[in-house]
Length: 439
Ligand code: C2O
Ligand code: CU
Image (tube, rainbow, N blue to C red; front, side, top):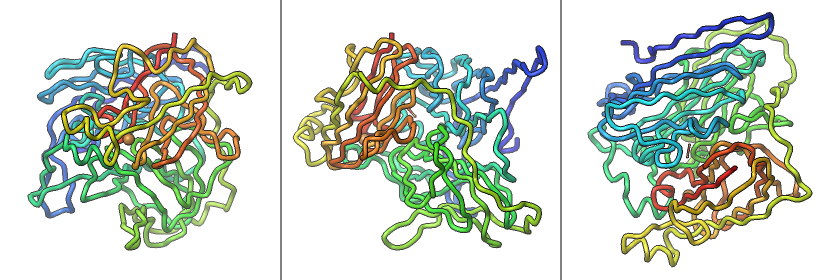
């Protein structure tokens, strides 16, 4: 079977002109796979994937459509699928022990939801995620705008790193305490996988959907051979497209870039390091597009989000604590959790806060640790508050550097129980998670 082949059927029933009710059905099978992580010619790596490959298939639907997923678990432990960044009904959020039972080996689960927002999202296992995601249980989830922007190519760029042994297998030790107490499980081999893998032309306008799918590594990313703007972050269009220099993607973060190809050789996705640029991936350039006329890169249509009530928000503080070189580390040494929010590790019966549906909160995220953390809220997007006090980007994951404080503003308008955790999955494994209730 073709590596990228997957079962997908789309049925669209036109009710009346302009009103189409479409649903897309997919079967998603988690199973052991073999993947060519190392360069061609080197050994393939036993991993986990969906429908025969890691990353899993590109799932793609139109904004507002219904998505039907039959999930079959054919790995030898429990799993579940989380639709990262999608503001969907709580029961479909894929969090074992909170929104559903774990899907045991050889069992199945039906997910069915509307995709409210157009943009770049992804799906991944949310059971023992620090291990299952590291082993490859993830894939891209694209929700198309009713009228997509005018580009010649729409490419997905998944950036990952792996910790490989000399024999081309994944290194063991997914719960290594030293990793968890520091930056998490960092790989010794990193790559950007471009999907579809097709050449572009000089002068083409391309949309690049960057997704950091690594469990723990923060990727600074530069583009060479293309000139453009960031038009969306974490699936949400930005109001003023930004020049992508200095782009940093925490685990789970996404950036959509629309850019014009300026090289006749290749477009490179580059990880700038102190020792110079590390080439993560490249898109070959062949031929020239002579028809496209130069034009401004325009904004994407905004998704519908609730307006925050800035006059009277609920004020809360979430302090990140623990890790190497902290007092809490001693608890880790005797088997406790290494990381905490507000002196609380892991999930308890008490949420971080209980919101009434529609309430606006301003949450001060205080990083009182020696490491950066990428804080992710399920079921919602929130505004990052800029240093000058203005509302910044709408995101589902925000990177807070060691010692830094960042405020976020969120309208809690999606009822249910939602996780709030560090998306450095090794930190999440070691206690850096809590939840909120919206009723
Ligand atoms: Cu990307 Cu709790 O998830
Ligand atoms: Cu963290």
